Image (cartoon, rainbow, N blue to C red):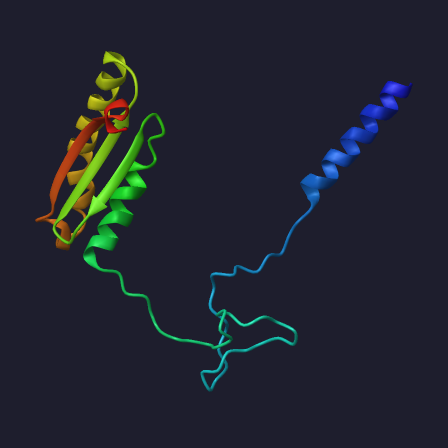
Length: 145
């Protein structure tokens, strides 16, 4: 009977956490603006920016930054090997790092070949990225130290 009570109590506690909901404010969202363009600030709320100012505007990304974002999202999704992405406005360099012997190198070379085939297809979706040069390197981690 004790075990039944313990199991029942455990299930009850476990189900309560599954039913809990949280209403979290996203700190990355800018404040809402009223009809005059001023931020609507609730009483006791902290300002959006650390200096207390309410700034409006936009963030501008250069082509190299956007390339890093697009290519990095794809490349860093592969967790078997460490990877790096370096960009400029007209080129992307991807590094695949392996540790170990021939098997590690072989796997890294296969991943590098996949990047050489897939990344141009991803970049083809962007008119501004048609002339981007893609270079994929494979590095032995033990030789870099």
